[in-house]
Length: 279
Image 1 (cartoon, one colour):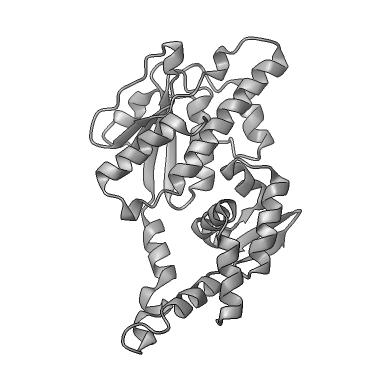
Image 2: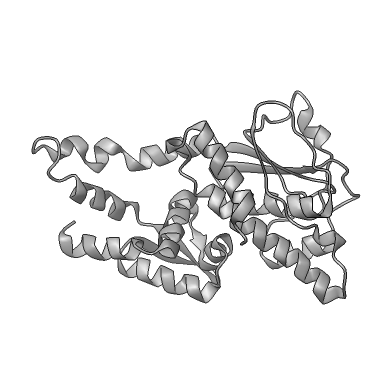
C-alpha cells in the first residue's frame, strides 16, 4: 500500500462516527453487520450511518455484500494489514518483515480476543424491560466478545408486551427472552460473571440488587418504562427511550480498549458510562 491509498484511509478514520463504525465491523468479524445494526449500536440515524459507510467503502476499509434484502458490511482486514505494513516499513533496522502484519498477526489477535467471550449480567427489579433490552443489545453488538444475561431481584411474570414489541420491531431474536430471578445465576452450575451492571433508577428510589463475588460492577441507572404514565404512545416512547439509553451505554462499553486498561482504569470507565452518557 502506498501513500495515495493510506492517506484516504486515515482521512476516513479521522471521524469519530466512522472510526466507531469500523471498530464495530472489526468486532463483528466474518458475520458482518447491516447499516441499520451499526446505526442502532451507535445511536445514530440510518441515513447518517449509510453516508459514513460510503466513505469507508471508498477508502477501501470496508466491503459490502447483499444478503437477501439486506446489505451487510465487513471490515477489509487486508487493507488494515496494508496500513500496518506501510507504517512499519522502515522499522526494525531496515527489516520490515520483522514487524509486518504477519508478525503482528492482526487476525490472530482478533481471534484470541474473541475466543473467550466475557459473561455480562444485567440486573434490575422486574426483569421485564430494561435488563432484557440490555441483554438483547449486548448479545447483538458484542457477539463473539461478550455473552449477555439478565435477571431481576423481584421478576415479573414475563416480559412486558411493549418490550417484546420493540425488540421484534428492531429485528432482535426474542425466542430466548424471559423474565427470571437472579437466583438462577447464583447456582453452582451457572456461568461465572465477569461483569454485573445494575440498571435500576436511583431517582425513583428503586432498590437495586447487590451481586456477591468478584465480577466488575457498575450502576447504569435507567428510568423504568413499565412505570411510565400517559397514553399508549407516551408509554411506548418511554420504552424506546430506555432502549436508546442502554444502547448508547453498551456501545461505549463494547468499544472500550479493555486489553490496554488496568482494573482501576476500567472500573473508572465503567462508572463514567453510567454517569454521563445521556447528558
